[in-house]
Length: 483
Ligand code: H79
Image (cartoon, rainbow, N blue to C red; front, side):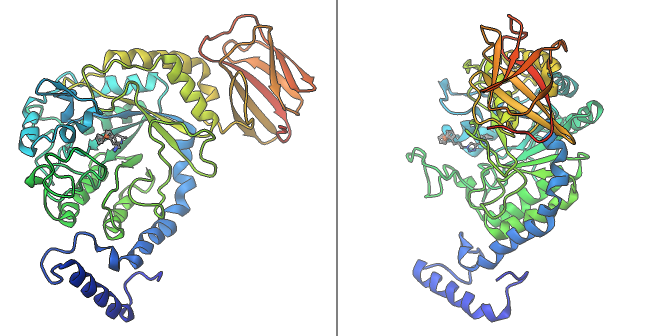
């Protein structure tokens, strides 16, 4: 049934199915509210969404993804009204991620919304944030324009529950970020929680298991203010807001959907045409199920062991254990871990979207700033071995990772050495090409490289140029031969 409309010959079947459902469920077939889960008549529409993607957007996938594949490294920013409580509610510390505080403590909608009056991030400086990202070697930024708590971080005409209208701040941070990004040549993307919304009536509820003591229905709501028609929420809040973020901020490089629970093909079809507002934009895979793939996969808080063959992918990850700011979360990953993660991800052909959670004053926490500086110092020397590279040709390297760039007549291999060899001999196992040149990326010095029965052996100086990861560059001619 791959047609654009529902053919008339199918109507009797659809009506019959609807009538049967109504009888079984005791639903009101002709009532004003549509049934909550209209899957029964949606098989055709399911295909429509997938076909719209396949026909309109998949053909331009490679063109739109080109800069993204070069970029390899971006900054995620989780910023919202949750930065005011910062993980603490009525003296109790949340054990969960900070941006989920409202759900964690089942905070009534009006009570949580009142936090907006305390949200006045006067220390926010878009130029500083963008420079921080740029100096860390990041090529793009993705910021939460609306998270599950329903609070818009931009001046929205679709809901007054936004940073411009509902706080004393009276500024639009997305506008300021868009200008700063343009100045610095950094791409800007927006995160938008399309389905889940705990503020606006009809927004989807969390699908997992939560404490049931305060649940008022089987949908995981805890406040009657959350109840309503999801289709109305989609039509009046989500679609207009996505239209706003794609219309009012200049070029949008990425649209980062999240938690598609309760999306249906019909609802997807309301968002898809909006993508035309930004013809160069890439979108992630979280608008809907498997048939609608988006442009890239999004492993969260993990690095897939062998990458995701045949797909573009981006690992998003926190620096401590929360996305949204929590005042007491001090479980910071070391700069060594973060840099090696970036190398590991690049060696598997993916991007790294590394998160910061700014405070309600508008500041990026100092431990994040320190780590970003350290990553930046490393990237200034080793960035060439990350940007525009593709996945390692080696299955396993005992001392570290490899990235590569294919050229018309050969290849450049970047050996990322985590464990510097104590005997000065770096074995590149299984490499059968003759090495044209071997150099240290840090100072350009030439190294000896010799064929060996196990592969190639590079003679390196006694001390590692960088304790975290040093780069040895091998240039080889012809097709890569790795056994
Ligand atoms: O925006 C970040 C997260 O808020 C969001 N995706 C990233 C990028 C996200 N949405 N859903 N999830 C992550 C799944 C997480 C569910 C849980 Fe929970 C939240 C597990 C622990 C906290 C719900 C609340 C169940 C337990 C507590």
